[in-house]
Length: 347
Image (cartoon, rainbow, N blue to C red; front, top):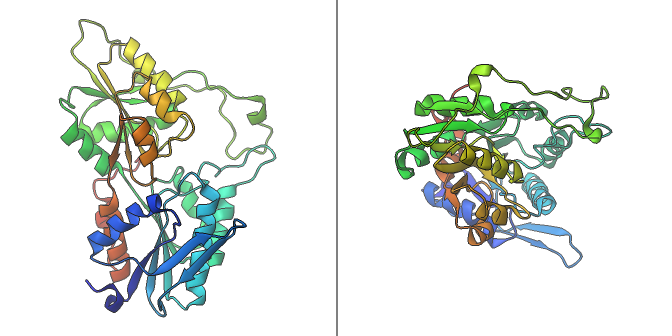
């Protein structure tokens, strides 16, 4: 496929080589080449972007993966979008597999909804559409003044379970908290497996206490339907493989490690943590390596090659296929419904 003749180009806004890997995979599937551009940091820390070819009248897709230096990545995306806008690109579509600041999407005491601010900045910079994956809250789509396609990684994670985990049918899907129960139920229904929920009293710090400014108000006591209790496994119970996958983001792994210990005490044979976005910052690789977790399965929405070197338990699932297909369908004006087949409401 000759991308220049078909009226679209694909650019990478990252200045680091590790972050361009996903962009290369996507362009290979599209049969295209990455657009010619230069993205780098000045000696004073400022970001500079130079577009090295004509983009006039074309659909431009900017692929931006988010490394640990989140703010630099955001500035790279904003400056590239504005450079393309001033170069008369017809449409500028941001392909942002992991949307940054998505955890700051609710009002907190004397705080702000930073995710809404970022959405406004992207629109002002010139973006006309966004492709992302597994937003932390679906309501974030309402922050944007242009279309947002929130794709799902669950088909790829479910395929990994079915193809790479032996005897997966002898398993239980576990949610590490009541908040994750709906997503866990979605996985359990599609795999036809049992469901368990770890629940208890939510811990609220003084900083997070409800004073009327929260949106929505904090829930101080977490309860769950008594039918969703963790099964009592014992030595005489059949072998149980616990697929323990309840978060879209895995960053601070302490809660996962604590839940894994509970599952081991209940007789779980193997424990798999599965999530879409593997940020795995700070001491996460070491904590995983020293824990009862057997494997952490994440997608390549976020680069984590360094973490994989530190912890061989971390496995990666490639999602470039669905992103490349989304790019093709948007450019050709085709329906996106095919990409959401077999996706449940709670996923």
